[in-house]
Amino acid sequence: METVQRDTFWMIASNYKLMMYIFAGIAILVFLYGFYRRFRLWRKGVREKVSWNDVKTNLSYFYQTAIAQRKVKKDKLFGFMHRLTSYGFVILFIGTVLVVVDYDFKIPILRGNFYLIYELVLDVFGVLFLIGLVLAMVIRARKIRPRLRDGMADQAFLLLLLFIGIGGYIIEGIRLSGMQNSHAVWSPVGYGLSVLFQGHPIFSVASYPIWWLCHAVLAFLLVAIIPYTKLLHFLTAPMNILFHPVKRTGNIEAPYNLEEMTEEERYDSLKIQGVNKISDFSGWQLLSTDACTECGRCDNQCPANNSGKPLAPRNIVTKIRDNMHHDEEVLSFISAEELQSCTTCGACVEACPVSINHIDLILSMRRGLIQNQVIEQEAENMLVRLEEQSNIFGKPWSDREDWSNGLNVPVLRDPKKVSDNQKKEGA
Image (cartoon, rainbow, N blue to C red; front, side, top):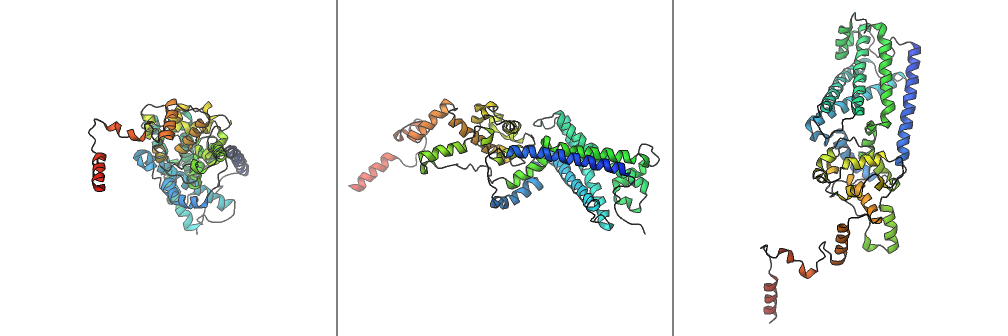
C-alpha cells in the first residue's frame, strides 16, 4: 500500500541540503540583526508600560483591524487584493512552519489524510496569493490608486513574492511528475503542471535540484530583507494594534491638569510631555512609525492636506521613522507649519489600517513647539485672550452677544423682559 506522506528532500543531494541550511542560517541572522537595529531605536524613546487591560481591550479591535481587515475592506478593490495576498502569505508561511516541524523537529504530522488536506489548502491559497500579487502590480502600474507611492522597491517586493510563489508551483509540478503518486490530484495546480512538464528538458527531474535551490534562495532573501524595508509592517503592524496603549479616534487625553499642579510640577510635566527630539517620543510611538505601509489613506482623508495646507500625515510618520537613527530636533526635519496645520479631527487615525495615532504624534510635537516658543503670533494671542477673558476674541463678558447685532438671531429669552418681570414680582 502506498504511503501518504511528505518527502521533504526528494532528489536533493546532501551538498544542496547543506547549502540550504547555510543560506537559512545567514538569512535568519541578517533578519535578527535588522530587527534588533529597529528594536534598539524604539528603546531610545520614553518607556511606556504595556497595560494588560489595554491588551484585553485591543483583542476585539485586533481581530477587526488585522484579521477581518475592516478598514482595508472600505476600499473594495484594494481590500480584495490585500486580503488575497495577506491571507495567502499567512497560510503559505504556516505551511512552511509545518514542514520544519515535520522534518527538523521529527514530529510526524504531514502524514495520511492531514497531509492530503494540507496539500490542497496550500495549492488553493497559493493561487489566491498569486492573483493578489498580480492585481497589486496592475493597480500600481496603471496608477489606479494615485495615493500609492510607486517606487522601484515596491515593484521589486511584488516581483520577489511572485517569483517565490511561481517557483513553489514549478518544483511541486516537477516533483509530482517524477514521483507519479496516486494522491497527486490533491495538489491540483502541481498536478496540472506535472502533466505539462512531462518530457520537457527544462522542467525535468534532473533540473529539479536547481529549481529547488533557486526557490529556497529567493525565500531566504525575502526573510533577510524584511527588517530593512517597509515589509517590516508584517510584524510591527500586529504589535502596534495589539499592544499599543488604547487611544481611539477622537480621544485626546490631557497630559496634565494645570489647575491641580504646582509651578514646579507644571515645569516638569512640560519637560516630559513635549517632544523636541526623537528620544522624547515614547517607545510605542516610535514602533508605530515602523508599522506604516505608506498606503496614503491618511493623506486622502486629511482636510488640511486636501485644502492645500503644508500637512501630509503620512509624511509626518515617515519622517520620524526615517530620522530615528539620529536623535535630532524634530524641527530639523518637520516644519512648525506642518504641525500647526493639523485640526485634530482624527480622520487620519480613523483611516489608518495599522492603527497609527497621527494626532498623538503631532500633539506631542506641538507641545514641544510651545516650550520652544515656536508658535504663530495669532495662535499665541488667542491663548492669551483665552486666559484673560475666557474667549478667543478677547471680548469682555458684557459684550459676548455683540457679534449677533443686525443678524436677526432669535433669542430664547429677552434679558430686558426678564428684568422687568423680576421687578414686577419684587413689587
